[in-house]
Image (cartoon, rainbow, N blue to C red; front, top):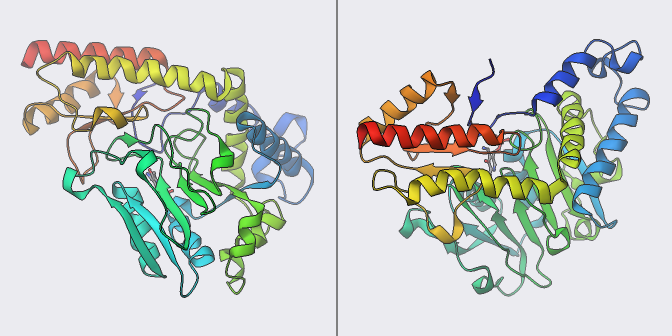
Length: 359
Ligand code: PMP
């Protein structure tokens, strides 16, 4: 029996996709070789890859003047590549420190150039976000950087700032394709695929082509986005297995209502858990209601002992991944696209029962 997997990433995949991978692992659609044995130049791989990129573009109606491709190195490499490319000597960039992931990106950028912190959620212990309308880039900023969903803190931007001529760059690792996004608001969106899109290994990059005009052209090859953009991400060997799986997940998303369908499910699944929290004196959510994440629901029990007991007992029911991140403690249910609706309902029922027994 499959576990109910609430892990924050790597995380649950659609079972249909896993079966499709299994079915075609040894012999890809009768071609006589596996996708992961095929050259990334031409043939079996490129046919699949071109379709993958086309599906990717169509799901979010990505405008033609954006390049789309996949890189390796994890989302973490982007914390470095972005400032290397766009935070030029003598300039500065705006960062919004909203939690672990935005903060790590800001820390890396500070090693490369001048960073202006427009917002720091430290005083609220990173449990709230600024009103997007109040966020204004500073004069002469090279770009404004934010993380759309803080996977550890459990806060998610419900709407985004408007930054005018200043390029808006977003890490959407943990909520990408869980809702429609107006790509044209952003100069760059990127994210690791290991939450909503597939197995770890690939990072997607969506970048408006003219942003490349503002880059540092003197970087080593891999660090230079222009090298990747020119070759649809095939400057060097891409993470082939991960991309193949992503291509299947994209088809699964299309067949399940696209980004709108994913949003509808995310509202319903997170609603199950937030409803339990809101109707209880036992559980509490540490985050501001206006920016609760639909992907990572963070919650607390009255004591740490009860939280440890919650994790142990939920495991016995086949639920895994509910322990909060080690840096913040507590509990966290990640409810990515592929998590079945029934699993969210089962968790809600388990929470009520646990409260009844221990409250
Ligand atoms: N950004 C966010 C929002 C994340 O959740 C994570 C990983 N959980 C990262 C960046 C870092 O990703 P990676 O481990 O792929 O470098």
